[in-house]
Length: 429
Ligand code: MEV
Figure (cartoon, rainbow, N blue to C red):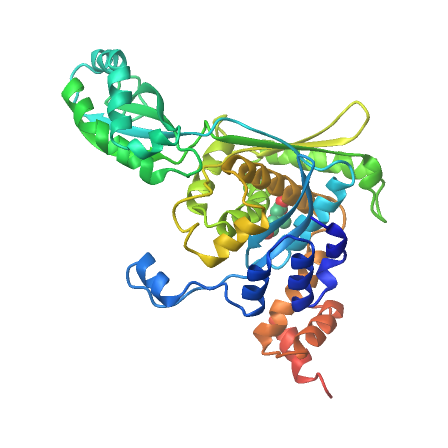
């Protein structure tokens, strides 16, 4: 990638941005032409095949976050998001973090979990023993249910059992059989559901119970990605505060988000601003990622901050974020949606593990940007600066009026829709 083409990217016109991405080698000529011709939408025919009762496409702005260096590789990160400040904040944070080496990531094996949960078993401990003693037979039956994933080197790799009580008491009611499945490049929902439905009759036979549920778990605790960054205090100072003060404030703010769920939810929402935007852009299932991430934030029994910010011996600020990331690079809408295909191309067609690294790094960058702003100048200055254009459009501004209204709104005492309408009505007076 020739990053010299991407300097001051945000200042370029729409066409210049597309040309720069092409010149930098981020996108090829065909993708650039599709962007110039505004051809990122699903066709009506594809939309109609994808869902029941299809009416139209519902669009989100699709853009790129800049300045990311992840595991020593420069990356341009595609995002689909309606919130005005997310891409700007991610790019800002990534620039500071890139100037001190970028993000370093570690990704676990990608094992997804499926559950067959049974009821009506008289002797649950004995049934659990029986299931465990038939582990190899169950794994083979699971793999026979989906030969193509086995051919690709994946499939069911392990099994365990859990006894569940209906009311959190000590006396169990249900038996849950977990398969741990390597879904390779896929998120794997369909693969796992096929496996679970495939083994359920055999498990019913073994336990004499009834399989009530046969489905994947979106709590993918064996598919984790961690991103870390180290930022020297010299990169943290603002006109108001020294670098040491900003560092300590970021650490304190994260301590608050670790002990207070009211703050933790907002803190983690800021992380997910970036993560979701990339998950959506790459055609992945953001509901699965969201559900799993928030369960992971509660794994201690209390909902807590997902990031940790500390200082090392040199006094640098060190950030870490670990997320469960059940995403894929094949399957679902990924090969169908033109926007998702472009997003994968922009990322250089990453493997699922590499995409996990990007997601964890984007989440860490987004959190750094948000918390740094909160503990220094506050969030509204940057946020409202970018929100001004949306307000101008809501007020009815068209073409070059949008920027003119936005510019005046930034200076106005009240930055709201009424003020935007007032400015628009008086624009040329
Ligand atoms: C806004 O979308 C996200 C923030 O509220 C996150 C945070 O408070 O950390 C700014």
